[in-house]
Structure formats: C-alpha cells, structure tokens
Image 1 (cartoon, rainbow, N blue to C red):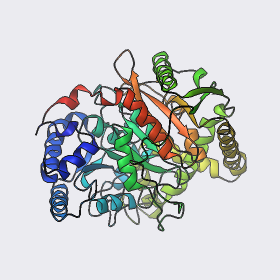
Image 2 (spheres, rainbow, N blue to C red):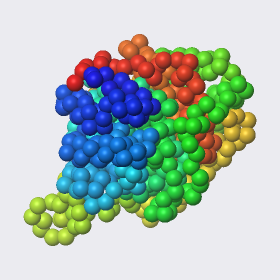
Image 3 (cartoon, rainbow, N blue to C red):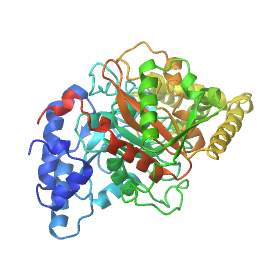
Length: 492
C-alpha cells in the first residue's frame, strides 16, 4: 500500500487489528519515505532502522498472540531530548553528540510498553533553546510547507516529521511554546499538558519548572491516543502528579460546545507585531466555534506585558543551573589537550555549546549572581505568581481562553531576527508555562503565502481532556487538519 502515511492513528490501529497490513509493512513504508524525503527536510538526527524493524516484528508477534494494545505496532518519532537506551541522545548539541543514553526516559519506556515502534530521534534547537530549530548542531530543519522556511522550535523536528508524513505522530517538549508554536508553523495539532501531567524523567533539562512533554500529531484525536500513553504519575519524577489519568480518546466528545465560554483577551489581539492574516484566521475560527454553540466572552489579562521579561529571567536562570553539569569531565564533549582544569572547563563549554545556549547561560548566570538575585530572579518569581493569579481570575468567568499561537506564520530560514525579536515571538505561549497551565494549538487556515496559522486554546489545570474535545469537535466541522504540504504527498 502506498498511502499508509495518509491514515489517522485510529485507522492505522484498525488496519493492524484487521490484518490489512502488518507493523513491519507499516514501519518499512515509513523508513522508505524517510530515506527518500528526509534529505530535503532534515528532520531526523538518527534513524533507527534495525531497532524499528525488530520492534515491529515483536509487535506483530504480540498481535498474533492476542496481546496487542490499540497502539501496538504503530511508529513514533521522539524528539532528541528524550533519553533512549542504546541510542544517541544529543539534545541538538555538539556537547552531547557522542552521548549514548544508558536508559530510557519514562515517556519512551511507556511507549515501548504500549508497543510503539521507534523510527528515530528528531532534530531540535540546541538544548530546546530557540524558536526556529536553527540553533541545532546538526543544521536547520526545513518546514515541509515551504522548504526555505523554519518549522518553528524547539520541537521543529517533531513538527516536520509529522507534516511531511515521515511519522504518524511524535513526542515533543514545551518550555515556552516549543510544542505549540511549531505545530502552528507546520499546520499540526500540538498539546502542552498541565505541568506534572507527563513525567520529565529522562528528558534533558532546560528549565525544570517550565519543561513539559506532550504529543504532536495531525489531529486532536491522534494526540489523544499518544496522551493515553504519555500521561501518568512517575515516582522517578518528584514534580509528577499522582492524579488519575483520563481516557483521552474515549472523552473526545465529552465536552459540549453548546454554552462553552471562550475567553477572548483583548490585550492579545492588540499586540504589536500580530500579523493581519494570522488575526483574521484566528477570528474566523472563533466565529466557527461560536456557530457550533460556544459563547465568546471578552476578558482582561492585565499581566500580558510582563510575560516576556519574566520568562527570559526565569528560564535562563534555570538553564544556567541545569547546564553547569556539562563541564568536559563527566560525559559529553571534552576539549582536546587541556592545559589545566580551568582550560578544560572553559574550552569544553565554549566549544561544546552554540551561541544561543551560551547567550542564555550568561543571562541566567547574571540573574542569579550576588547583588542581582533579589533584584531580578526573585522579583521575576513574584511576577510569575501574579501571572498565574491573572489566569485563575479569568477562569472564574470562562472555560477556556483563545489566542493566536504565534503572532506570525513561519519565517524564512536565516531571516535576520535578532534574539530579542525572536523572544518577543513567544508572547502568546510562554505565560502558559509560567503558570503551569495546559494549552493546545490547532490549524485554522493559511496566510497569503499558504503558510499555516494556528489557534491556541488555554485551559485551567488538568483540563487536557476538555481541550482535546473542543479541538476534536472543531476538526469534525472543518478540514484544516487534513491539509497536506506538497512534499508529504510524495510516495516512497
């Protein structure tokens, strides 16, 4: 079959159950597509051919023995920030180019238990720091909708593999929008769960109080299947919540749109730099939701101007602490022929880290230094609490909050964005991480250059099921999530 890559997760699951095709046939189909198409997209850092085929054969054996789950034998791609036993885990950095993980991240282990087949590890901004996937040591990943544009970041590789039909779905991580923004840029659905809903064990840390893993796929339904595998308490992660996991697939129609109150923050639609086409597509999607029964309610989010400065103090400060372990001594990149221990530290870090990572380490170290800790870091944490309270006050009036996912569509690779401009592009996503809330991005149309536009819906704590349900019902009434880039239509 040449069109296996066009099937939804539900259709793949049903096809495997009905023996229309085997997991090996499905896996070989994707591996052939990767070999043909990925040299143009550059989404994979490592393709695990032998591992994938062995896992596919094991999945087929389980299915013949009547021991298969809904996802047994379905391929997945993992962002190269998840540790994978016996496979290189680089975090997109020269610093970890030689690191072979001795263990699996909990998310990877849960996928294996469910019978998922690992196609490989996909590209990302170095240590998840960036919004374009250009800071990777392995070079820039291309946006399948326009190969001269970025796929977003830091989970740009995860978005690109799904948009190019090089994997049915993928794992990503979101520290300040790194699932939602690339999902928006590549015309996908991406969910950032509540902080603590998905284990962080085995995820290479960027900013520990902000990082959260989640699914990226074409539709809310496909994301729900992966969330059923990813979510849950993990005793190995002290920030993981011991809270019962819902059946996200079974609940896809549980939330009624009739009377659903959607908050429209007036501050969000008056942000300088909001592209006219993005604003128009988002407003059209909100009108559609209104037609389906939702009620639009204008709200105030008065802390909006504090989002960017607060995030870009807290995240780099945590990065400075987390990345101090990469010193050329224990593991990872080590400078050659150091003169002494200080030279080893200095050269290993300056040669192993790229420019964006060094920039954020410097910002964070400055914010944590004596004399500035109280003035910057502590104050930012206080403002963070005010941002959280601002959202909680809004949720007294509404069920979900709507916004653009990003102020623009994807920009060209190499565009002369200075770091501050790039940071300002995170205006709609970073507050969700600061508050620890769940949020989802879904495709709602295109701009004048036929580049995808995303709508973001923000929920109250533990409302992942509601967010998936709202987007699922929107997607039942529209076809934006079924649109495919030309490169995705190529047959292997």
